[in-house]
Image 1 (cartoon, rainbow over the protein chains, first blue to last red):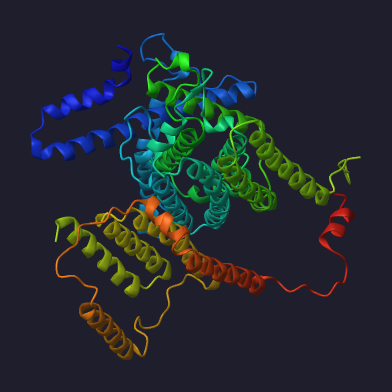
Image 2: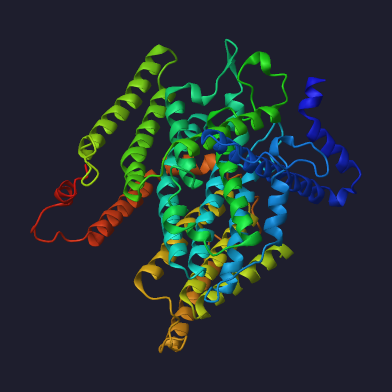
Amino acid sequence: MVEKLDQIFVVLKQQALGFVPDAGRPFVSALISIAFIPLVFATLFAFVTVLERKGLGRIQNRYGPNRVGIPLTKIRLCGFGQFIPDGIKSLTKEDIVPRAADKVVHFLAPIVILIPVLLAYAVLPIGRNMTAADYDAGVLFFFAVGGAVELSVFMAGWSSRNKYSLLGAMRAIAQMISYEVPLILSAVTVIMIVGSLKTGDIVAAQNHYTFGLARWFVFTPWGLAGFILFFIASLAESNRTPFDLPEAESEIIAGYYTEYSGFKFALFFLGEYLGMFAAIGLGITLFLGGWTAPFSFLTWVPSYLWFFAKLLALIFTFIWIRGTLPRLRMDQLMNFAWKFMLPLALVNIVAAGLWHFMDHGPLRWAVCSALIFGSYAILGRGLMEKQKLGKRIYRFAD
Amino acid sequence: MSPAFIIIAVVTLFAAAAAMSLRNLVHCALSFVVAFAGLAAIYLQLDAQFVGFAQILVYVGAIAILIVFAILLTRSDAPANRAILAPGWMVGIAVATVVFATLGWTVLNSAGLPGEMPPAPEAKVKNIGDALMTQYVLPLEAIGLLLTAALIGAVIIAMREEPPKAGGSRGDEAEREGRP
């Protein structure tokens, strides 16, 4: 029963394939796997937009959307019907293209942002035996297609012929390239320990239990440091607060999509959120054990539920951070990536290497933790000393 | 030749031709990206996953961005009013033909070309990594050193020369303004 519930989607797909003639089977199999991804994650996107508005509303001491429910009844669904009118609104809005814009590139940019983002989901294991394409070089594939997002951001910013758009695009690309380095370097530790780039192997390596507790990589010193680095870098990669300088409504309107309206704007919005989910999904796969349960007595819960529970928990953390932290300044952003996260990620790689070659026992815990936290403290102290932080002096307000 | 190969080849060649002949430099760069992606698709079609993904990561993700940035930062984006072809285009074509002919002749006459297709070796990423870290570790290190030297050189060239100290550094300015 438990096994059946866990594999229900896999079994259903096999049964559906039974109705298809042999020749078309690989094609239909691929089609089902592909169709599943936009369907599920676009629904999640719709849900998360409302969740985010409500969450931010709570943090800012207001209600957030709570009106739209089922039409002609009094059922309000706590406002979770909001995404349907939002979608209709963006579909029916006028599509404005600036007269000076480069029409072709301006049209292509929102499409180009969605393609790599959707491709990235192909290698994410969302459940036991539920990976669309378990490539031998899966993690590499993920980062490779992720790199193409920058190009679409450039296309949007440049083709709009608007200084705010171009500034936003330049900021976005500089930020994405800078944070891609710690993002990839923090993922390298897991690849070193597992010895494979295949996402399936990475999850399988974490699917063991000691005293009932899962052996996820986040429960090791290098894994914890790697996860935190990965989390911060993926926050920056998805252009969210406190790294939302590329959009920065108060300074450059909305950055690279200032000149987009209607459904093209909605596509950018969708692309950004799907990119965020994909980055979180990879973080879960690498450090939080993918679809595995945290405790051995909870393994009866279907694997895909665990994946989405972890996904929603991390999305909630993202929303929480958005409601809490102010935006960084450009120089702070760059300094943080190159002077703090990059050295720490490199030290973390050394720590993971030591962890691999030392004997099991408390000694390797002590050595790796000392290495990581020591370098963390030294780096932090060293960078803070130059800052000359002190009490703020006001020139005119006193 | 499979239909997939033909489609990819046509798209790649078309994009490469567009990259040469379009008037707007940014359009050229973008069609260049399509050509890169087409090459990656050909690698993938040959089951060379690592090379294909590395091609996308390096060329689409990094080199293309570098090219568009270089275009944006160095010249205005107004299309040039000159002829597309450079004055010496005949010589260029001649040189290209000679180089291609030499390469093709060498490849066709090399002893390493077997008559029939050998069975495809199982090139897993792990094998590539093992080879890079054992057999080819010296070339890898040499390339790493070369790239690092180039990187540092680029930073030194790009570094602005310090103007002679007249008033004070940025820190002093901030202090005068009352900012911490």
